[in-house]
Length: 161
Image 1: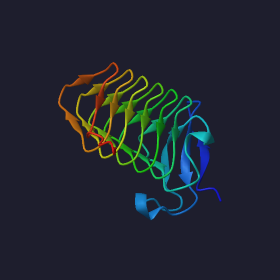
Image 2: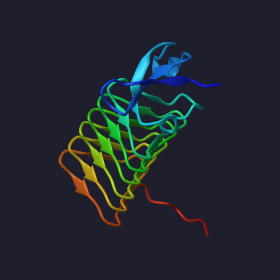
Image 3: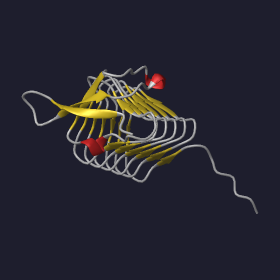
């Protein structure tokens, strides 16, 4: 069963999503208008994932599972937002960035390259994370930070002998 349909957005090549079912977890009811997409494959019909009215998902980017895109966020390139991740507040996720699990990206953050943000990581403010950076666990990055290269930030992994 489909959870949304596409409505052509006047003056653009984009479509606005329109809810065909209630999604109480996202405070969406039948008939609510959501964000803008280029095609139906941008938002999964499975799970409770949703794109709010002022957000956009373009290029080959996808929103899956129970993720949410909110408040003027833009997802582009081949980026994937999945699980219960949230991208909000004018943030940009692009290229092949992967946002998953319970990650939160907000307040003008910019995630790009092959960056992976996972676990309970929070990226808050004018933070730029790029290239092959991996953030996981209970990490909080905020302020005007820039993280890039082959960087791993997260909880230590204990090996069993």
